[in-house]
Image 1 (cartoon, rainbow, N blue to C red):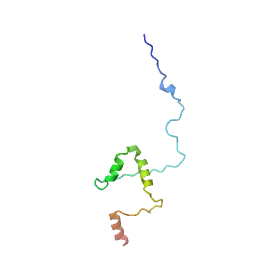
Image 2: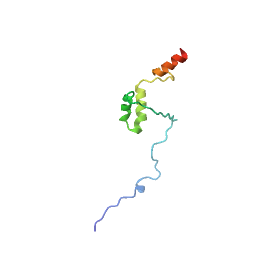
Image 3: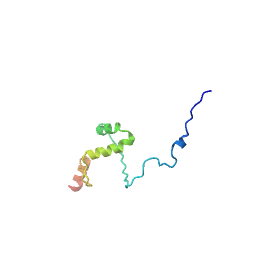
Image 4: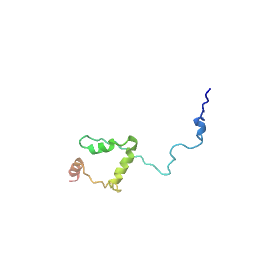
Length: 94
């Protein structure tokens, strides 16, 4: 007759009172959600950028890209480059 070693149950291996998962953060968290509509032909560079990033890593990649792009810390300081926005501004304020 063969003898087999039986391991301890998983519940005995783990300390039942040990904390699992990520520790709680000591800071306030702000959640800002984005939905991007990207058009083939017009936004191919962005489609390519996001296509190789796993879904759960896209927020980190977007933050890194925004920081690397030299975004301004002053609200409303983004230059308007959209043709429609420029046209509307010209009609309203011109």
